[in-house]
Amino acid sequence: MAKKSTPSISLSHFLGVVVFSLCFFVPKSVLGEKKELRFRKNGEFKILQVADMHFADGKTTSCLDVFPNQMPTCSDLNTSAFVERMIQAEKPDFIVFTGDNIFGFDATDAAKSLSAAFQPAIASNIPWAAILGNHDQESTLSREGVMKHIAGLKNTLSQVNPAEVHIIDGFGNYNLEIGGVKGSRFENKSALNLYFLDSGDYSTVPAITGYGWIKPSQQLWFQRTSAKLRRAYTRQPEAQKGPAPGLVYFHIPLPEFASFDSSNFTGVRQEGISSASVNSGFFTTMVEAGDVKAVFTGHDHLNDFCGALTGIQLCYAGGFGYHAYGKAGWSRRARVVLASLEKTEQGSWGAVKSIKTWKRLDDEHLTTVDGQVLWSKSHADVSYLSNNVHKTLEMRAVLEPVERNRLAALSNEHMRWLNTEEARSGDL
Image 1: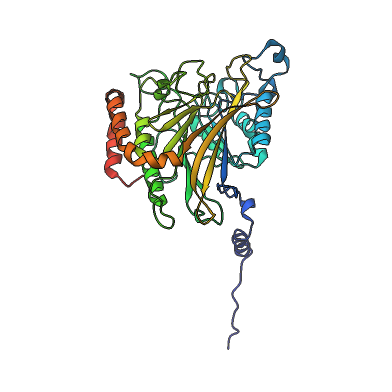
Image 2 (image 1 turned 90 degrees about the vertical axis):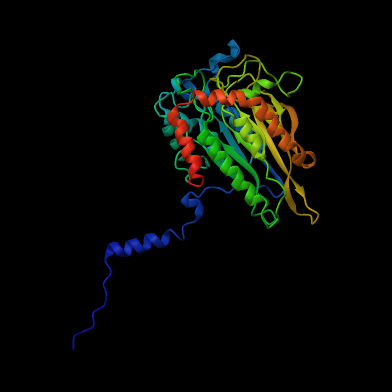
C-alpha cells in the first residue's frame, strides 16, 4: 500500500498567506485610512478656510504688496507661518484650502511647491481638503495632475472626483459628511454636509471670454448628491423634517456676489467681482436644493465680505498668501466657521443649531474681526417651508434670461451630453 502523501506548500504561497493575513491586523492608521469627520463632544465643529496662498518656491520667493521695510525678510515662509499660527490659535477640526494654492508661473516644480504649501496642515495631523483655483495648473502639472498629487498627500480628504460618477467636468468635485457626536442619537447621521467643486480656470468656449464656471455636469452631480443626503437625513432613526445644512466651497465667485453694497454685507469690498462672464445658473441650483446655507470662495484677494441672498450667505475669505497681490497695510487674513449643535430634550446632542463665522488677521495679536451668525435653525424653522417655493420662483424669474443666453453659448456637443446624462437618470 502506497504511503499517503501530504500536501506541500510553496514558499510563495506561504508568503502570500502571511501578507494577506497581515492586511487584516495592521492598524488602520498604518494603512492610511481616511480620518472620520465628526462633531466634538462639546457639540462643535470648526473649519479654517485658507484662500489664495499663491505659494511658489519657498524662501526664495518674494512677497507682493507689503511695505518696503518688510521686503528683505518676507517670502513664502510668511505664508506658512501664518497657517501655523492659525492652526495653533483656532485648533480647527478641519482645514479647507480654496484654490490658487500655488502660483504656477513662479513655481519651479509643482509637486514640490504643493507639498510645501500644505506642509503646515500635514504636520498638524488635522484633516484637510483642497480645491483648485485658476493658477494651480500653470507650473509643471496639469489640473488633473495637481489634484492627483493633492489627493495623495498625508491627512487629506481631497478627492480627484467622485468614484461613482462616470463623466464630470473639472477635477476636485466631491463631498464630505460631518457626523453627529459619537454616542449621541445623531451618531450615524451627517449633521453637516460639505460640497467642493472645481470652478475651473478660464473659459474653454470660444464665444465666451474670461474665467471658468461650474458646468452642467457638476451641477447635476451636486443636485443628486444633495437629494441623496436629504433622503438619508429625513429617514429613521431620528428622521428630520428638512435637510441637514450644507456649506459649499469653490474658488471663483459667482456673478451673484455683485448683488451687494456696503449696506447689506459684513466685511469689505475693495475690488470688482471677478466672476465668469456668463451666469452658469449654479446659484439657482443651490437655492432649489434647499440645503445650502453658505458659499465660501477666494480669488478676489481684497474682498472679504459675507452677504445673504435668497437665504444663502455668499462669503469671501480674503487674501491669505504673501506672494499674492494684496494691499500694503491691509493684513492678510483667514476665515473661520463654527457649526454648533443643539441640545435635545434628553440632554444629548442633536441637529445643527447655528453656523457662525469670523476672520483672523495676520497681525501681532491675530486680531478677530467681523464675527457674525451665518445661519440659525431657530429662524430657519419658521421661514423654510413658507419661503422656499417663493424664493425659487423669484430666482428663476431673475436668472432665466441669463440662463437661456448661457445655454445658447455652450457647445452642441456639451448639450447633447447633458441631455443624454439626464435621460440616463441613474447612471451617475
